[in-house]
Amino acid sequence: MQIRSYKYRLRPSRAQVALLDAMLRDFGGLYNAGLQQRIEAYRRRKLSLRYGHQAGELKACRAVDPDGLGRWSFSALQQVLRRLDQTYTAFFKRRRGFPRFRASARFHSATFRVGDGLTIRKDRRLGIVGVPGGVKVVWHRDLPQDAKLGTAILTRQQGKWYVVLSVEAAFAETCGTGTVGIDLGLNSLIATSDGETVAMPRFARRAQKAQRRRQRALARCQRGSKRRLKAKACLAAGSARIARQRRDHLHKLSRSLVSRYRGIAFEDLNMAGLTKGMLARSVHDAAWSLLVQLVQFKAESAGADVVMVDPRGTSQTCPTCGTIKAKTLAERRHRCECGTDLDRDVAAARIVHQRAFGSGRDIGLRRSSQRIAA
Image (cartoon, rainbow, N blue to C red; front, top):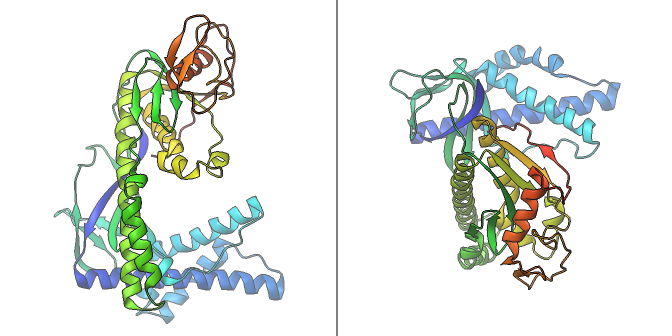
């Protein structure tokens, strides 16, 4: 049994949208009140409150405010306090980034248990406590027949509403045969050790002119005006469209790789360092980290193996004789005295394959894939 997330678009009516907005506003107020209570308890009495302390007062808060917190699901309100507790735990773990108060306009999600606060009705609409009627769902794909539904996250993104269902089921997927090494690049998104290259789609670069126009329109608007809110929403919608295009392309590419190969090797690149250099914009547009993550969880489901290897020298080493052939970034062909003449990225992919699956010449860091959330 595996757990995956299924995301569906919601089509609520205007009255339902108003109530959903009010729900998130009340949840954000509860989050801020809980944070203020923790700060004051420690400041005045040196007490460190936990989830249990605050959850015990939740019933009394709902009774005092029946037209506010009392309208919504009790378990969903508990999840808000759990979120605050998780934020505090993460702060003490990393010792930086103290929890901050959340503006109502920036509190965009609520967590429910399916069957408790949020239900899927027989007419395939969502029933949400405090929201009359059923919320229409765009079921663009069916749930597995044997699926067990856990949590449901109701989220608002660029003025649109979605529900993300946590689904536990036995997903029957298969992988291909053979192994492949993959070099991540900027001229070609990937190059495989088999000689195949996939062109860089450059979604952000293609939309750059339109995004700049939207940014200038936003800069010309007066702060606090309705026109500025519209310009800001237009800019956010453009960025969201780029992200959807990129994610859709990487989903299809990762599925293609897992369907063809049983063993897949990537370079273990320092993504955080690369996103701070002179090529940061292109690296962000390539989204290598997302591609690796998608391949990892698809490979885990299909029984394939993902290996991360040491990236040092992959583009400078000859895959045939092992000679170090230094090259600048401008040189896109690998030519060696042994007679090897390959595309630079394909040659690097072959070195990655050798280090991952063995050739007796190159030794790199080898780390098996770890399971991640879908």
